[in-house]
Amino acid sequence: MPRTPLQSLGVSDTNQNVTRQPDVEGYDDLMDFDAEGFLNEWQEADRAAVDLLREALPDVVAARVPEEQLAEAVQRIRTQLTEWPHRHLASAADWGKQPPADDETLWIQAAGALVSMNGESGLGSHEETSLMTLQHGDWAGAVIGLARAGVGTRAWAEDLFQLADKCPEIEGSYEADDREPIEFAFGLMVPVWEAVGALDEHRRLTPLGHWGLPRALAWAWDGSLDEG
Image (cartoon, rainbow, N blue to C red; front, top):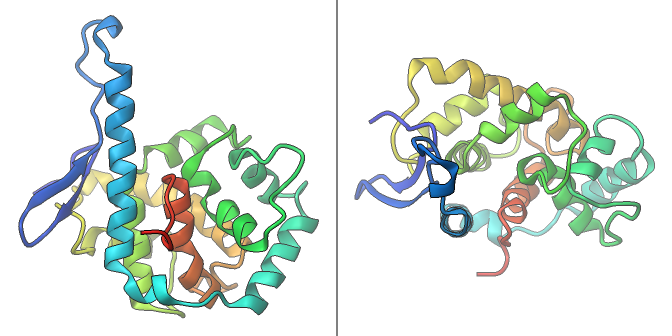
């Protein structure tokens, strides 16, 4: 079953949708667009995606934060807020002039900022649009697959595409013409996740990334991996 442009989160053994992001195409008149209904559906998609992360990754939910790696990564972020990519993460997370004081909060928000896009990132319009075309299922499939594969797993753009495509919790599969735009968007994230310490210099998953990337997605979707 091919994935739609606004793809579903699904449960593979029942083929039943958990949720489907609302499709705004096909309206003849914007006056017919139900903004409140659209927002409600989007929020439901967020909630379903967070629930899926929590159910799919119980080991990550139970994991303790790698405190030494977290401290090192947060120190880099705090001291390089005017440099790439941290200035874009601060803008996208909508920190304003003051980043979060708590280290875990700061790191999770930095890693998830370009997923949430709570503020204008300052990236080019093509790059920002590409990231925003990724759906819940793309992000969740890639990160669930990466976390399951474990620390040391390679996370280049093509790897994330394959992990997302093969994730059993995500309904359907990609079509051939999905690869280029999705790999391009994941390719934008890989060096960012390396910069915040979720990936190492060889772009393999670190203990911090294993603990933190699912939490970053949950935060981006207005939820928490630790609060069921």
